[in-house]
Length: 185
Image (cartoon, rainbow, N blue to C red):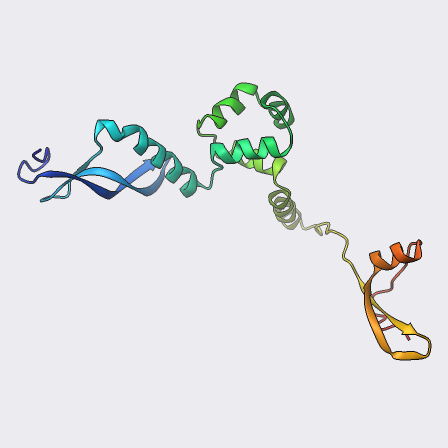
């Protein structure tokens, strides 16, 4: 087949990188395309349009930092929700959840909302960022402090490292540890 652009070269099916722009985000994907041997003009054959559309969807989601349909479904099922329950949990319509899981693109604010409600690490980073912007100290998870306890009264040189939680469990009582005390003699 002759090139539709230059009329001189031959169109050959091969792997090629194609440029795309979706929602003002520019990115490239690699897939099968007809490429002119002379001018490099590219066209996607009709029988490969669905395959290419999936590549474009994946490429855009990656470039824009959006969850994939598979990621959204995994987040929902990881919480043990059906689509209706997940929609209620997120405060969106059930139809939105269905569309997202079938591959419809969610906007960035919906993507952030899903992550905040399903990913503890993402939520923690958001909280830290918010506290920093507000000039507040970010709440942190309780630190496990380590204390040193001698093995026996007669052998004070040997000591074992224990964390407070383990000692509380062993002794059956809550323990207070004062930071900066160092080894217990």
